Length: 194
Ligand code: CMP
Image (cartoon, rainbow, N blue to C red):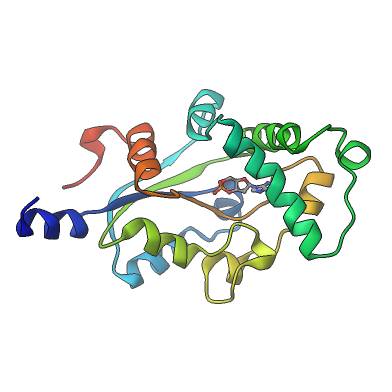
């Protein structure tokens, strides 16, 4: 790739953000969007949608590694908070993969329970920049100054005991490959501004 091409590629990196039903219900849409705008990211696509189960099933990966990671993260949080968890007794599952599958299903149901805002953002290192502004997945661990750190406080342990996913306001693509896949899934080509 020549110099011009590289400059263009960096300037035009894109990522997907979804404001989840808890963010919409709490009236945080404007606040969240303004944080991205203030950082200098460009909005190249925007919409409000009621997601179907089919769409959410395509959105969240089904790989063993991803599902297992969901379950493992919960155990890691429990360890950090010095809370003793017994998967069989507390969650009626045999291993972290089964717990991950349960969480994935709660997530899909939750994402379909109310309207979602979909946003395509563009700018240098958009994926990484957005993740930095959004903060850590688990709200109680997210730093103040990040969106999750400032506006959410949920715990995965409490959430799972209540048979629901953790409410963390936002989904943001994890890497460039994910961003490409997710942008195609949520936006038609002509819905994105060049
Ligand atoms: P998201 O970025 O949408 O990707 C996966 C989601 O799973 C994550 O945000 C959280 O909402 C949710 N999540 C992650 N870990 C847990 C957990 N241990 N328990 C419940 N939900 C979780």
